[in-house]
Image 1 (cartoon, rainbow, N blue to C red):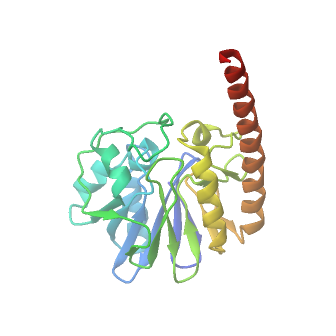
Image 2 (image 1 turned 90 degrees about the horizontal axis):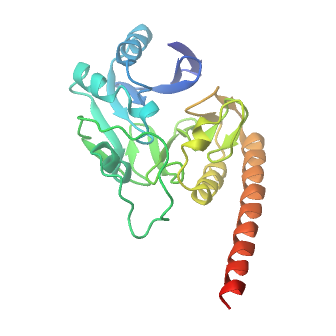
Length: 250
């Protein structure tokens, strides 16, 4: 895995040039954010060892296979490390892919593997885990979360944004790397979450796919505007379709 530093507290680990997880330095060791695909446990542990600290926490932005793929192997190797995920996405780890009645009944996309590891902490909006504040960012998955480092306003957003193939909000297809969009659950919620993340005025945008972006506000704004326009167009077509159906019924 390739290691890229952002300052002294954030380290991006990249698998095959496309899949990222992150080490966040704390006083007692590293918090690992996401676990990449399967087979990456030892490379992740070795990367942390080279940086001189143990992994003491494993936190997950969401339950897709390229983010939880090495969770079970890491838990086996690091049995005392705390494991945390949003309470909503924790259900996916058990194989429960049902949607709540209050949620948009949009079809789920992407792979949700069943994991043997049971989370030791279920996260909600506003929770703190070390220096990280939990930000609820549903859309890519129902329980997707992001993390704001309160020391320096670095933002780790999982798949709420991507930078590989171009900066985009989840749900916007980038032809050079379309996978995050194809695995996205609800684009309207993605847009609301992207606006919420922009309002945090992050110093660094750290994503699940692609390079870290310093001073990312302008790029985030452009990406949000692109999805806004696309969704307005989609909803206009949906409205016209419903009107045509209604006229046929009448």
